[in-house]
Amino acid sequence: MSSLLVENLAVSYGRTEALKGITLRVEPGQIVCLIGANGAGKTTAMRALSGLLRPRAGRITFDGTDITGLRPHRIAGLGLLQVPEGRQVFAELTVAENLALGAWLVTDPSEIARRRAGVLERFPRLAERAQQYAGSLSGGEQQMLAFGRALMGAPKLLLLDEPSMGLAPILVDEIFTAIAALKAEGTTILLVEQNASAALEVADHAYVLETGRIVLSGPAATVANDRSIITAYLGG
Amino acid sequence: MLAQQLTNGLVLGATYALFALGFTLMFGVIRVINLVYGFYFTAGAFIVLFLTRTLGWPIAAALPAAALLSGCIAIVIDALLLTRLRRVGAPELSSLMVTLGAVLALYATATAVLGPDIKRFPASVIGAEAMEFASIRITQAQVLILLATAVLVGGLLALMQGTRLGLALRAMAENPDAAGLMGIDTGRLAALVSFISGALAGAGGVLIGLNFNAIQPYMGEAMMLRGFVVIIVGGLGDIRGALIAGLLLGVVEVLTAGYVASGLKEAVAFAILVAVLWFRPAGLFGRAVARRA
Image: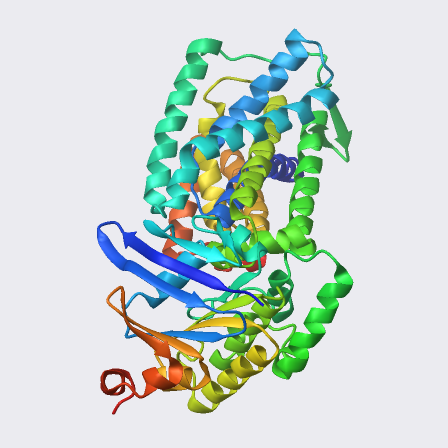
């Protein structure tokens, strides 16, 4: 089981500081959630963790290896995989091709077939749609595909950026059930969500991000009962 | 008469398609309009000129060597000029301006070093005599161009549609960030695409040089305008579209020259460009870059 340590991570777009030095820790086998409003810097943090943005300062350590500033394909190669914001499936490729790309770093065909069977068992819908273009899928199906694509890479630690975004409530439940199942199988997860109540329900630990800074952290149950969190994010 | 005109048009069109292939591949996958592309074409022709005339190599050895070298030049140019722009996510206009400046500097340098006069391949390089089939005359160089175009278009389509590498290239064309998240080394693939398109341009320069047997530093520049028509009409990044648009352009030019007035053929070519963009802004054959690539 894998762990992630983020220390004083700062990211800027030109002169705009999107992250002003955040520190957080994901322990092996945990689900840690990072909640916050739109524009708080959640996606910026996720992009920096995957190497899509270069941090201005700070350090990211994955399983004891310093991965700060590594290119995205190197980070993916270590088993730190991301389901990005807005799913970002390859719309002009088929479902089967999207899944094949998820296993890009795997060369053994029987291993690829085994993982594919596992993903299709988890999300039977994808099997029915295997030859369709990903762009023709519904939002919920695309989210399943984005999940399945990441699972094809056998993640040690999975970064999930707003998996519930734009989904009907029944699909949100389905997605969070899948997240809980992944945890039960031993995958460590860092979950970014605007849907704070759903995230706090599955998470072990929570961090609250506001305009680029961590303003609160603690066990998920404690954060869920914090008065300021209830007012700001849980509609209390 | 018409059959001969159509043949000439197809050969001319094949040269346009051949020239445009690498250009459209480069745009389709790495999303960059690289105007230095025309220089790779010039480079290929001059490398073969040197190898055959000065070193006495046969064309069968000189052609692949020129393609290889042009591909390497393309990797270097891409790394020097464009890698940085890609990393900071610069808009397409930046790459356009940077490569415009670079290509003008390269042409001027080549002219200063090699001289502005038109050079020719040695007569021994390829037979000049024409063959005749059913009263259609066609030269060896023209046959070579038709064959090379068919093989290269087929090969590129097979690469893009039938291989794992092609799948990664199509993914990268659509979303380079997401491709990186899959573990695809997008920097290395960009260099590979630069190499392939540089090699295609170099080979194109040699074959078209053989056909017209007139080699001079700005020969790539003359093709570049036609190249633009072809890749825009065919749809940016669309390999099949480039082939069809290239052949159409060649046939239209030859027929205009033969039956209307030879002075009008360029006017017609660019009028087609304007008309296509007016009615179909994404090119004749639709929009889907990656799916069609």
